[in-house]
Length: 66
Image 1 (cartoon, rainbow, N blue to C red):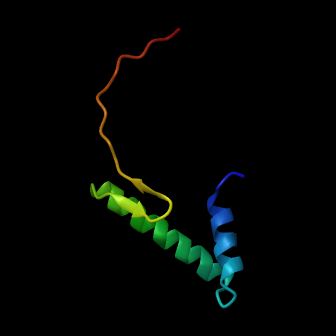
Image 2: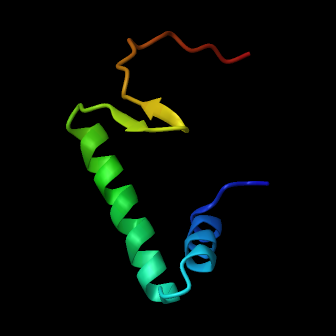
């Protein structure tokens, strides 16, 4: 199964009966916005039970056209 934003929103909506679909979408968008801004500012993001995310700078490499 491919994990998409729509799938995440639907899962949040299905597991929270008091939440509307619009509220579920706003919650997911807010979480993703917080993660994105944290990574842009150089902070690591740890989602317990899922994984740790960080940004690594890589040096440029010479590309080849086969």
